[in-house]
Image 1: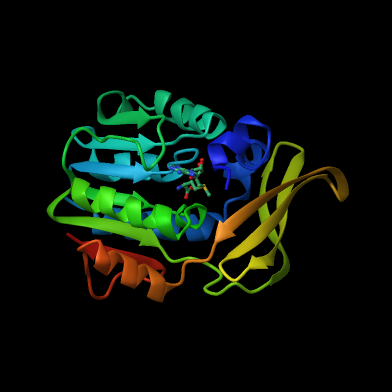
Image 2: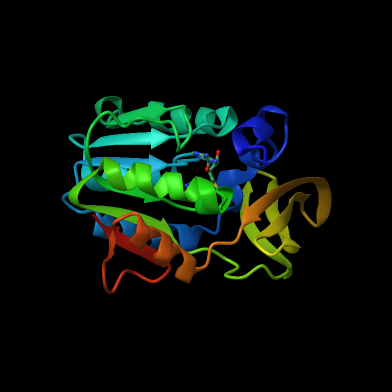
Length: 246
Ligand SMILES: C[S@@+](CC[C@H](N)C(=O)[O-])C[C@H]1O[C@@H](n2cnc3c(N)ncnc32)[C@H](O)[C@@H]1O
């Protein structure tokens, strides 16, 4: 399978998604995930965020952990990294605290042992063999007692997801929304088709579509794989998050 940073270089996937990303993310959900994650990581100092995207959670981490934190923000797709770096460059607290690594999750080297590793909205891009390497690599990068935090995946089985319109935000005269659906590719993957729609008043003025072929990773599969990587589940994790300890 072609990786998403290569697809983005070809103008596919995240290259289509990136200009809309911060306008279409479900803001309340994202803010509640940010609150939960920053609550979990209170007191952490060295954190790697894998697949940081445009940096919504990087900024939240920075606010919560302060300028003495050492955050490694790993983002291989150039178009997403441009947004990430632009966001961080506007924040003086990031200057010393955040290092942006352009490698991918299977090659990036945090250069230090870590108190926590964060993977949000990312795991669907890894097949079973890649996940085995992913978990091993980042479990090993944690200090004993360090936390690995992963967002629960949707859907939990390879099944179609009916089209739904996800309202986004407005910017000036334009309002943004996403029409999203998933179709089954095979027993372990779905293809998400997302159409990013721009409206001026009631008039649709632009629609651009990106597809993402995503691996289905159920909670049970995650638990089995993280156990095999030597991690232990933290009981009563916040809803929607899996929290594992080295
Ligand atoms: C859906 S976005 C999520 C961004 C951010 N974590 C968030 O929740 O807003 C997934 C991100 O993972 C990145 N990504 C995809 N494959 C990756 C890989 N192999 N290693 C690291 N990041 C990857 C993509 O470039 C994209 O920015």
